[in-house]
Length: 229
Image (cartoon, rainbow, N blue to C red; front, top):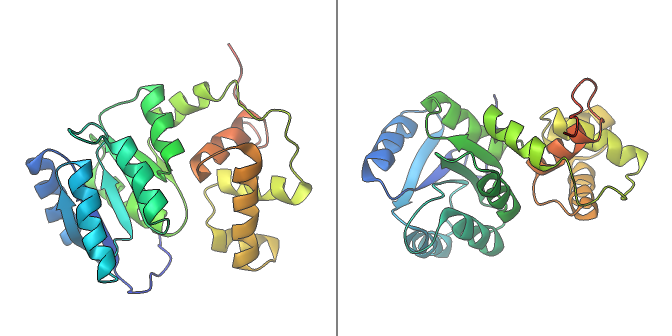
């Protein structure tokens, strides 16, 4: 998976996990990945916010934060929400042991652009980081299944999308980045980004992942429609 280029051509990653061994393992692996550098780490949400704020003052924000969800003082969902509110350009990928529906929904509604389980291969974590930078999404298949079930009673069933918005949300469900959407539809990347933003606002969704699940549930992706039980 090829990431969109960043302003500094190197993907800057910040690690948040209350287990030092987990952080050390991730730092060692990601530090060996081409085009990636770990710029900081924290053991809890409050410490993460403080350390990212210091990086922001030197114009050195991370591109992606790998976020554990269960931590003392300030959990990963609350931390994700604050990160996205204060620094919207920073992407967050949740990395956790939990498959509970409320954890998945909570992380995505807080603004996470990916959801991985801690038993994921290290290469999958690296791919998820690149996907987040490229404006795409990476979600564990088991988490996607749980989220699809959670969206069987979506909050926005009465909302109608325009034909162009339907085209865009289908491409989102197919994993397309804003740049790829623009290329396929013959519009500028800025226009594609505006369409994505309008879709999320109209449907009351918080992330591209939720939009993809919405499209699957409503039968916009051939052969992928879920059935209510």
